Length: 125
Image 1 (cartoon, rainbow, N blue to C red):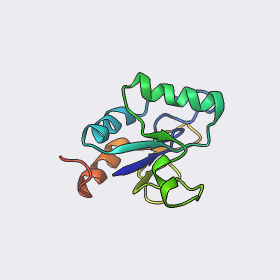
Image 2 (tube, helix red, strand yellow; image 1 turned 90 degrees about the vertical axis):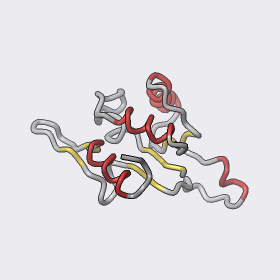
Image 3 (spheres, rainbow, N blue to C red; image 1 turned 45 degrees about the vertical axis):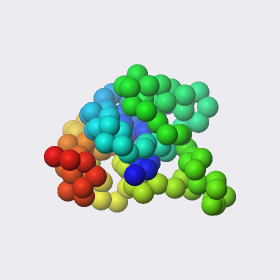
């Protein structure tokens, strides 16, 4: 499965343009790639800021299929929308979020997200 992953608020806490604090995404993302799924970094970041986000994946030893595009889809469409079977994004309807007192924005709750991935048969228990 190809999975598009947002970055700020999804892989790390919102501290754009900086790399935010850890929110628990790396172990689940590693597990997804180890299960054979391909990840596309799907973010508003570009240029130097995109390279920094890609560096977070490299630092955490999480392979990426691509960033902000899916080269494979160019065989059948010229659409700018990144094709994936699943999108994980803190702005997506239904994604479980964590709210912390004193923090202005919620972020992805990876414990609950992993449970959803198991429920849908995307990851094993």
